[in-house]
Image (cartoon, rainbow, N blue to C red):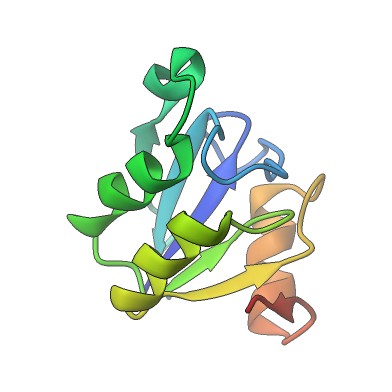
Length: 113
């Protein structure tokens, strides 16, 4: 399964971004792999409204089964992710990408709504 993680940077040592829609990067990890697919999401920085839904649409082509983030997406983005059957896990803000993935695997993150 692919797991999307909001991130402040493009590598394993980066921190999980508390934001979903305006996260600088989304990292895609395939379980059992050490390989990261990096999605640069910085284009939404200047978007006045709708950053969350735009980021959710960006994830659509990557088809993750789970999303790890800090505070979770807003209502509109959450609806899109739900329709995509993406399970959201929150509470990982400030963890390294590696630590957040481990917390997810150990069932230590809270499921989002």
